[in-house]
Image (tube, rainbow, N blue to C red):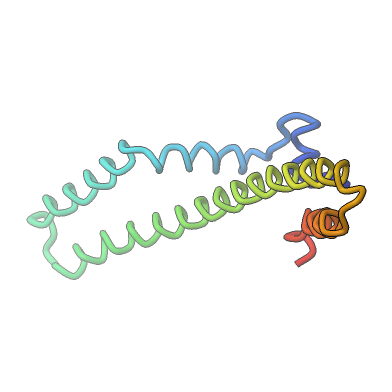
Length: 131
């Protein structure tokens, strides 16, 4: 069976790019309570700054701009983290399926149903890469 990129990386050590390490760090930080409280603090600070603004539209535009930029960046980072998590889960499923196919094949000598199931399972391993 051909090793996937995840398996090759695992075999050769941590070869993640600085961006991948940053994404993992950011994903960990934004998924914890302190990040929520920082965001809530930004909103409270924005609300408290109303008397400092002469134009209400500029005051509203300030929070909209900041929140839009942060949202765009976080969506990109979290999508990357989610993709990598999905790849890791798929790699684990492929390993389990390969082991199960080998186990079933060892006991499928006289059973055409088990032989067919083993063939289908082996064909399913790595299916996500072919589609």
